[in-house]
Length: 338
Image (cartoon, rainbow, N blue to C red):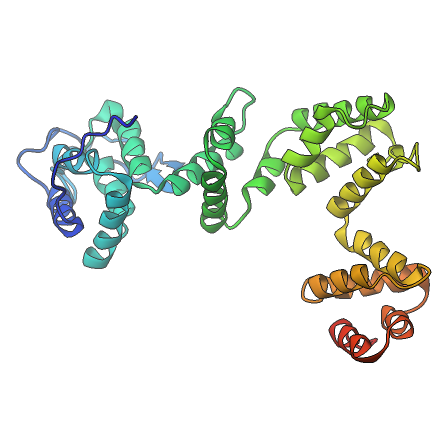
C-alpha cells in the first residue's frame, strides 16, 4: 500500500508549475540562505545531470534563495500521473524540462551535506517509473560490482509490462539496449560460470536440466553470445558441436536450432530454406515462412549464404521448385540475382 499523502483536491498541473517556478525564482523563506554558490568544476555525472561541489565564494548566483520547502510540498504529494502532467505542462509554459530546472536550482540551494542525496531523490521521483528504472540500470552497468542488486530488483520486482517499458526507456535515453550494455559492462565471471554449468550438464547428458533451460530462455541475445564465446574459449568446442553427441535426440535438435538461431540467424534460416527445397516435395510452408518474414530483414545475407553453401542461387532454386503466381510472388520478394 502506498505511503504517499495526496491532497483531497489536487491543484491543476499549471498551478503546480507556477508554484515550482516561483520556488526556483527565490523566496525569503528559503530553508538554507547561507549556502555558498556551487563551483563549476569537480562535477559528478549521474542521472544524466551535473552534480556540483561547493566553493568558498559566498556570492549568490542565479536562483539564490530557492524555496526548497515549496518544491517538496508540491512534488512529494503528487501521484505519478499528476507529476507526469506537471512535467509536460512545465515544458510547455517555461520552455525547459522540469528535470533540468530542478537540477540547477536544487544543486544551488539544498543543504551542503545532503546536496547530492536530496537532488538525486527529487530527480528520480519526478521521472516516470520506466525512465527511473532505465537511469538506475545505466548507473549499475557503468559501475558494475557483484554486490549491486539493482538489476535484480528491476528484473524481478517489476511486472512484465513494467520491465518492457524500462527497456524501451533505456533504449530511448541511452541509444543502446539494456541487454547489450549489461553484456558489455559486466565482468566475465557470470558468463564463465554459466558456460561451465552448461558444459557440465551437456557432458553429463543432462540436457533438459532446469538450469540449462533457465539460461537459454531468460538471457538476452547479447548475454548468450558472450556465454557461448566463453564456452568455446574454456572447453575448445562450440557448444553446438558438443550437442551433436546424440543426433537422434529430438530435444537436442531443438536446442541446436535455438543456438544456431541465436548465434547466426541468417545461417540457420538458409538451412531451413535448403531443407525445404531439397526435400522430396518442396516444404512450401517453411519456404513461404522464411521468405515472407525475412525479405525486409536479412534476405540478402541469406541469399549469399545459400549460394556459398549450394553453388546455385536461391532465385534459381525457388524458380525450379515452384510454379505459377506462387513462384512469381516469391521471386519478386527474393529479387533477381545480382
